[in-house]
Length: 469
Image (cartoon, rainbow, N blue to C red):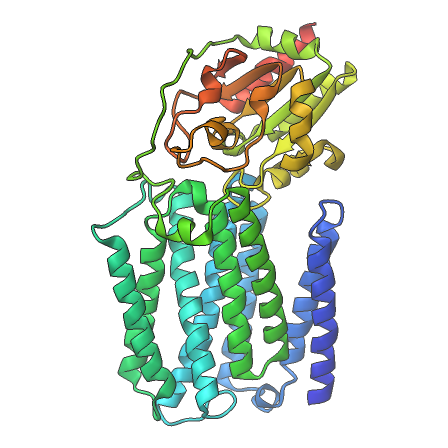
């Protein structure tokens, strides 16, 4: 039976990896998600054939497992069906946290067994205790940190919180976690009190690490916690001697790590700077340079004329588009412009929105042609030949100070070259700054005009204006 289960694990792991690969393209992403999902269901069902579970048929533990699986699946299905696309980052953060919390809970059970003198999942051994502790601390930090990220994304936590000597406190917490982790990992038998203190400290550390991180860094943070969750699951897979957990956790952890590195590179900032600086927080004072020019307002009809009689229009979406749920209106406007023979493209910055690929998901949901959605490297050479760059809800990712002001907190971050278009129209609700808390010099440029108002309403007015021409 063990051979059959291991074979199933191997096949499902291969399918899972293939599905993950397919998720790298919008064209095959849906198929990849289905394949990976089916593989994980099969692997979960195969686990019930394991001797330690199969021999327990009819036990209260097995009944509780089935109840938990059914209840969790029902809640996940209903919530996934109901969640708005604009709230997808919050759901991703929540699921990241649940994965980390599950890994930490597995470690807690095994360590509590050891504290009572029982054998753990693979027997009482120093290596297993160390792996359990590593998975526990990583999973606990991911769980509590993801909870804070969820609260920030959901608007439950309006401001970042940075305590006096915040990093000193974090260092102290980290040392305390290491000390109690060492005691738990090397003691025989394990002290129950040490286990409790260890988990409490690890959870607090996750909270303290995430509290001072601002909205500008949320895409990187979500990706980082995803990687941590995968790593925690892999460690606990070794503890339980479960090949499926080891493979799935390793794949998720490695892919999440690569994605985190790519996101940090897109912001031109190291991971350490994301975790330990105050960029994007309310306490971070941005070094500003004098702004020349003034904001010039434009009416929707004039903006519609400017686009309708151009040859190329590049649309730059940001989180403001997601909040306004304007992606469907943008698709309708794009179709109208293309019907007039105008070349319409969508420019996507890697960290636009609140999670990796946020803008791609929203535009794909609206039915925008994948071939017209271009990333930063592909679209930047086209801005100088664009008649109009329409910026809707984007801020820091089009701020030219990233190229010009070495004292700016976003200096060196690759940006979309919207300012190089012949004309720039910015749809914005008000005159506020972006996540980084600094003024956007693009808004004051000679070739920029501001179309104020809710994103969806403003695009609807542009559509009405184009139809009248």
